[in-house]
Amino acid sequence: MSVLVHQLAFEQRIFWRSREAAVFVFVFPLLLYVLLASIYSDEIDGRASADVLLAGLFGYGAANTAFGGLAITLVVRREGGLLKRLRSTPLSPATYVAAVLVSTLVVFALQAAALLVLGMVLFDARAPANWPGFAAVVLLGVACFAGLGVGAAALIHSAEGVSAVVNVILLPMAFLSGSFGPTTEFPAVLQAVSDVLPLTYFIDVVNGVYLDGESFFADVGALAIVAAWGTAGLLVAWRRFSWMPHGS
Image 1: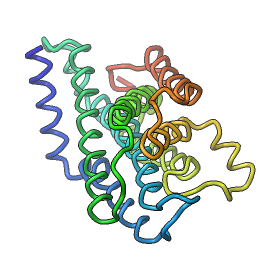
Image 2: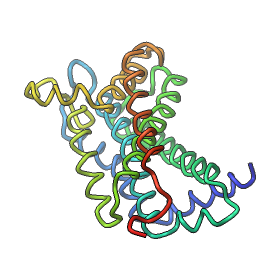
Image 3: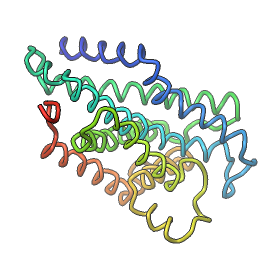
């Protein structure tokens, strides 16, 4: 346990000392929320726009932090030889992975809290209608998108191109899933794409818990789809992930 705590503290220091990571992963969703909440009118689909946008940005933040941030971190460390060197140290792979995942959870939990404070102070957004369910949503988001992030890291071979690949996946997914606003007026083909994306169903769960005060288990179908995507990412990682740089 002491080794895990030590590695977790190290992961947190590395994250917050990296201006690029702190801005891209932590600050960017906060900036997006301020911009979007300043632009949209008072209501979206009969709900306060500040609340609807906040729920959407919770979804984007989970995907950006756990999918985007984790994929970039693992690819850069693997291709730079850091993961290879870690294998020759007393630090076990399981402890390292656990520390990285818990560090990701800490970052997203802090980000979710910052989004809430920002929304409530600047835009009169509401507090979550179901606090325990909201805490469970934070865990679900990290678990699902971390699984996808590790799976993506197993498939992306270039440290130079990983940021581009991640953003090509992440930003369209967030747009189509409703992170940045309503999707009801989208063309049928875009709505069909949205219907298969994990972020769409994660935002559905967030909406139920945060906006409506529903039980975390109110929409079992959405939970199952989110969990299935996360599991699929882990299966890809199990079969394809390597601790060695590609080409070595």
